[in-house]
Image 1: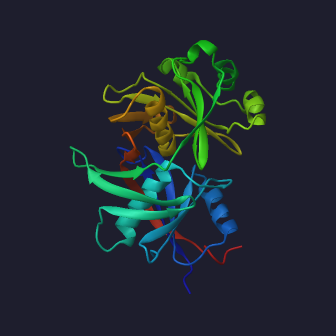
Image 2 (image 1 turned 30 degrees about the horizontal axis):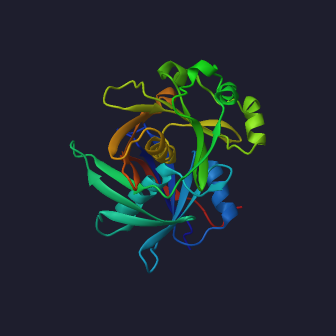
Image 3 (image 1 turned 180 degrees about the horizontal axis):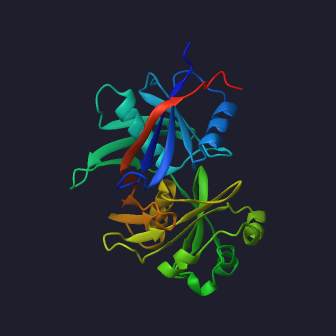
Length: 296
C-alpha cells in the first residue's frame, strides 16, 4: 500500500514566490500519531507545519492541527490561510468561496475574494482575544536590545492572547524596529513572571508608502527565531488598536519580513465586533511525504 502523503509548500502573505511566510501543509489521507506529526514539523523546520484531514466531517469542516518544530500550538494566522488555500485548490472539486477548518480551539472559516488587481486574497476572522497584563518599558527594552527611549509610551506594552499569546511592543520609529532583537537571557526575568517569549514589536514608520504599519515577530523554538509574516500577531494588533487607538472600522496594511529578505504584506480589517486578517498565498512546491506512516 502507498502510504505517502501529499504535501504542499506555500508562501503566505506573499506578493510573489519566495516571499512571505513559508508553510508546509500535509494532507492526512489516514491518521498520523502526534509524535510523527511533531517529527515531520521538525524536519520541515518552518515556523509552522499543518496537518489537514483529506476528508471533511459531516459538518463540512477539515480537521487541522498546527505544529512548530518543537510543539503543537492552537492559533496562528498564516497556517490558517495557507491550509485553507490548499483545501480550496487541492481537496475541493469546485472553487468554493469559503472553507472551514476545525482547529483545537474551534472552527475557523477561511474566505476568498480578489483585490482591485485581481489577486486572490484569503481571509479569516480572528477568534475572541484577551488583552492581558502590561509591562513596564524599563523591563521590556533590554530584552529587545533597545533603550527605553526607543519605545513609544503613548500606548502600553501588553500581552494579548487567543490560545497562543504574544507581547505587543509599540516602537517610536523604523530604526528602533530594525535594531531590535529578542535576547532570551535578558528576557529571563520576564519569562520567570510567566510572560511568553513571543514578541511583536511594531511602529508607524514604513518602508512602502502604501503600507500603514511595520512589524516584526520573535519567538523561541530551540533558539530565537523570527517570523517573516505573522497572522496572529496582526490579529492581536487589531484588538490592541481597537482598545487603545479607538479604531472601530478601518483597513490597514502591515509590512513585515524585510529583515529576512522575505517581504510580506498582511491585510488587517478592524470592525467594532470583529478583526479580520487577510493576505495572498503563492504555491511553491507539490509532492509526497515519503513513508509518513511506516518510517522509523
